Length: 486
Ligand SMILES: *[C@@H]1O[C@H](CO)[C@@H](O)[C@H](O)[C@H]1NC(C)=O
Ligand SMILES: *[C@@H]1O[C@H](CO)[C@@H](O)[C@H](O)[C@H]1NC(C)=O
Ligand SMILES: *[C@@H]1O[C@H](CO)[C@@H](O)[C@H](O)[C@H]1NC(C)=O
Ligand SMILES: [Zn+2]
Image 1 (tube, rainbow, N blue to C red):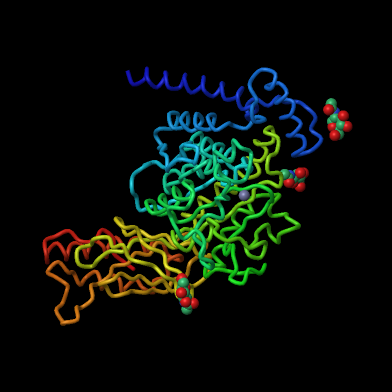
Image 2: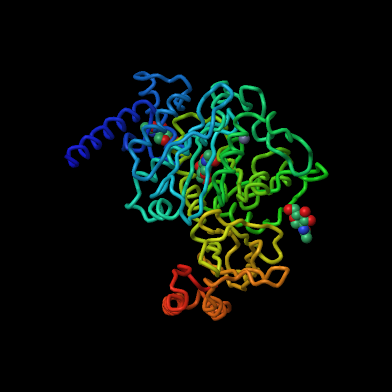
C-alpha cells in the first residue's frame, strides 16, 4: 500500500514538473543542446530566448514569463506537497489587497523548535524587483531535489531552519511598481534608530507589521532580502545620524563585512565589481536610507541582515532567470550554510537543575547582545574567523561567566553553565539540586585549546560528563545537565 502511494506521488510529481517546464518557459532540463557556443552568459541567453519564443506560442505569458501571484502561490503549494518531508508552508499575514504572504520553511524537522540557527530569505520587497522571488523558488526546489544527494543541501536541511518568503510585496508586483498598494515603500516603513518615523505600529503597512510580528515569534540568526537594480551585497548601517553619505559601521562591522563577502565571493560578477570594492558596500556609504528593514533586524530582532542587489536589470527577460539562478546559487547556499560553518554556538544552562536558560551572549569589545533561545537556551553568534574573542554569558539572577576562545575557520561550540547569584539577604539561592561538580568540569575547560585537539577534547568531555553525571546521581539522585564544559 505504501509503495503504491509512493509510486502515485512520484507520478504526480513528474506530471507537475513537466507542466512547470511549459508554464515557466525554461528549466535546465529542457534546454536544447548543440547550438552556438560562442560565449558564456550570452550563449545561455540566446538559448533561453529561443526557448521562450517556443513557449510563448504554446502557453500564456501574462507577465513576460515571470510567475504571476497566483502562479507563485501554486508553485509554493506544489512545493509543499512535493517536499512535505522537509518543509512546511505557512503564511505570516496578508498584503493590503489580501494576498497571503506565504513562507516555505525548509528543515528536516520543519515547525519544530531545535537548538539550531534559523535563516530567512525575503524576496520582492519592492514590487518592481521580481528576480528575487524567482530565485527563491529555484533555491527551495534545488534544496528539495538535492537533499541527501548533495552535501551542502543536506547540511542546510539537517542543521538550519531556512524560512523563505518569496514575495513580501505581491501587490506592488502586480501593479509593476516599487511601492505597495497604499503606495508606501516597505523598505522605509520600519522604525528608525535616528529619526522618529513610523513610531505608531498601527499606522504601519500590513506587510511591515507581518514581518515585525514574525520576528517576535521566530528567532532568526541571520537573513537577507533580495533586491534588484545593482549588483552588490549591502550591510548595516543603512542610515547616518547626520544624513550624510558616509561609511557608518555598526558594532558588528567586521562580522557584516565577512558575511557580505561570503555572498560576493561566490558570485563571479559581484566580486568582480568595478563599482564596489569586493562587491560589498556599507549602506550609508552608498546612499543613506531611513526606516529600512535591514537595520531594524539587527537592532530589534537580533538578526544579522544583508540587503542583496542581485541584478543590475530589475526586470530582465524571464529567459535569463535560470542564468541568474546559476550566478547566485552558490552565494545563496553558502550564506545560509555559513550559519553552521562558522561562528560560536552553544547553550546556556542552569547549574541548579540543568534547565536551559534564556540568557545573553556578548563579545568583549563588541557592543551587541545575542539572546539565547527562550526554551532551549541555544545561541548562535556569527563572528569573523581566525580571531581571539572573549565570550560572556549572562542571565539575570545568575553569575556571569566568560571565557577566552580562539575561533578558527570552522564553527565552535561553547556551552555555559551558570550558577545562581546569592540573594541580597545572604540566603543562598542554590538548593539541594545544586551540583558543584559542574563548576569543576567547567574550570578545567576554560582554557582548553579546542580547535587543535577536537578528538581529545571530545573524549575528555565524555569522560568528565560521565563523572559529573555519575557523581550527581549519587548525591542528589536527580538528572543533571546534559552537557557540561565551558
Ligand atoms: C554563432 O555566434 C557567432 C558569434 O556570436 C555568430 O557570428 C554566428 O552567426 C553564430 N552562429 C549561429 C549558427 O547562430
Ligand atoms: C557576468 O560576467 C560575465 C563574464 O565576465 C559577463 O559575460 C556577463 O555579461 C555578466 N553578467 C551580468 C549579468 O553581469
Ligand atoms: C552600546 O549600544 C547602545 C545602543 O544599543 C548605546 O546606547 C550605548 O551607548 C553603547 N555603548 C557604548 C559603550 O558604545
Ligand atoms: Zn529594492
